[in-house]
Image (cartoon, rainbow over all chains, first blue to last red; front, side, top):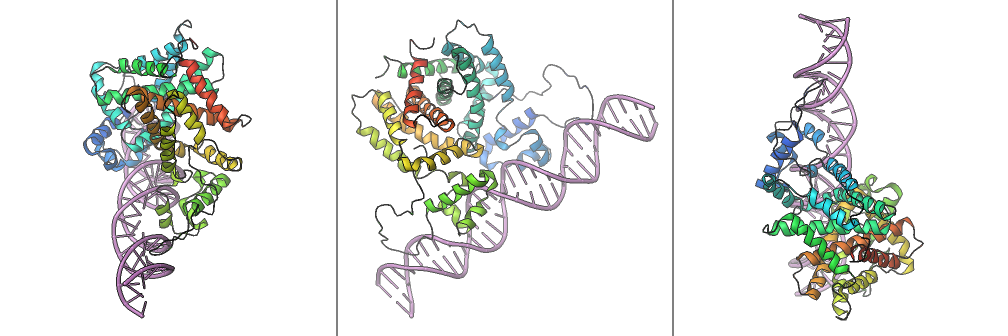
Length: 213
Length: 213
DNA sequence: CAATGTAGTGACACCGAGTGCCGAATGGAA
DNA sequence: TTCCATTCGGCACTCGGTGTCACTACATTG
C-alpha cells in the first residue's frame, strides 16, 4: 500500500462473469495504468501527455478521462478499496493491543507485498515521491488515509476523529511511513516492513519522555 | 507562519530607496496577493480566474505570471525568507534545550502573529486548508519546511538530514502544527500558540513509552 | 429475427493555467 | 538626446480537464 495494487494483470480478477447490459468496456483501468506507467518510466511524467497515453492504449482521449479523473491518478490503484480494507482490518484487531501498535501492525500489513510485485511497486512509488505534480496530488489521498488512522485512534481513545490527538497521530504515522518509503527507495537492502517499524520507533524515541532531550 | 506574512502593506518595507536601473515595477507582490485573496474570499478560489485577478489589479495576464509562478502561490508570502529566518532562529537556540523543545519553540515563535494580522491570516489559512488545489500545492511548501526541521534535528542528533529519525520528526511536527491550525480555524477560543503546544504534547503522549498503550 | 434499451466510445468545441517570444514603454545614466 | 536596463503586456501555443452528442456494441424481449 500506499497506492493500491494493480500489476499488469489482465484484469477480471476472480470471476470471469459478464452479467448483462450494453456495450463491453474496451479496456481496463489496469491496462491503461500499466501502459501509462511504462511511458512515464521511459520518458518522464511531464514528457508524456494524456494524448500519448490514449493513443498508446488505442482509446480516445475522452475515454481516458472516463477511466481516470486525472493524469495524476494513474499511479494509484483502487485506493478507496484499500482504505476500506484497512478499516476492516483495524476493527478486527484485538482491543488489548495498544493503539499505536495496532496501527503500526495495520500499516505494515497493507504495505506488505508479494515479492513479484515489489519491482512494480518501487516504480510507482518512485514516481509518486519524485514527480512534483504527483507529490502534490498525493496529499489529497494521504488525507483520506490519515482519516482512517485518526478514526481508529479516536474510537480507541474515546475521542472525536477531528480532535488534536487522533489527527496528530494520523500525521505522524503518515510521515513515518513516507520516511520509510523514501529510505527504502534509496536503499532496498532493508525490507519495507522493517523500515516502517524502525521509523515508528524513531518517533517514539524522539517524543518519548526519555527520548533525545 | 506557515504562509509568510504579507498584509495589505503598501510595500516598500523599511527602506524607501529606489537605487537604479530601468523601468519601475507597476505593482507589488503584496498588492496583487491582497487583491486576489479578496476575490477568493468573495467568490471562491475556483471561480476566480487569473484573468480576473490581472484585470482587478490592472496588469496584464502575462505580468501576473512574472510576479507569481502560479495561482496557487498567491496565499503564500515570501515563504523561503521565512524558512531562512527559522533556520537562523533555530541555530541561535541554546544547545542545552532538548531538540523537540527547541523545535516546538521555533514553530510557535514563527506562528505567533501581531493581533491586527490575525484576521487576515485566518482567511489565508482557511483557503490553504480548504481548497483542494491549494492543499495539494501546499505539500510542496511543506516539504521545504520539513527539511528545515529535519536538518536541525539531524545536526543536533548527529545524524544525516535524510535519516529516518529526522525525517520522521519533520513529518510529525508538520502534522502537529497543521492539526493545531485546523482546530484553530474551527474554534478560535484557544490561541494558536497554545494549540500547537497541546498538539505536540499529544504526540508525545501517544508515542511515549507510557502513553495510550 | 427484428425491435428496443443500455452502457461504453470518441469526436468536437470549449475553458483555464502556464510558457515562449518579442516589440513597446519607462526611467536612469552617459 | 542617445543609450541601456528593466518591466510590461499582447499573441500564439501547449496541455489538462469538461460538457455535449451522436454512434457503436451488446443483451434482452417479443
